[in-house]
Length: 115
Image (cartoon, rainbow, N blue to C red; front, side, top):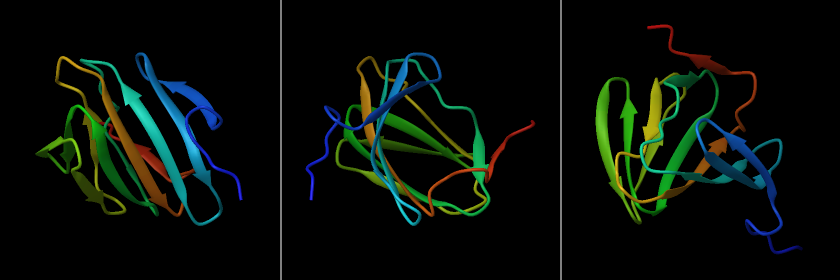
């Protein structure tokens, strides 16, 4: 059993200056730590099969879910059901760090908003 952290997890970059670390990646579960700089935003999208849970570790975030806004701060999270259009953004002046837990892991089930 190995201890996993951002120091030894697989790293990737996405969006405009955002980072991610794959902490857990199995057939049934994905746990990712992500970092967003101030002003960054994800593209609005949905997952056909994956249920997700976003949990803020540091900073303040805004999650849009099916057109409704949810403000999140440290030690708060929100569940995203399969099929819900969503996106997270960092409207604050400081870095946003959060966990994304997905089951099953997201894959080819991502559908981007065409509107």
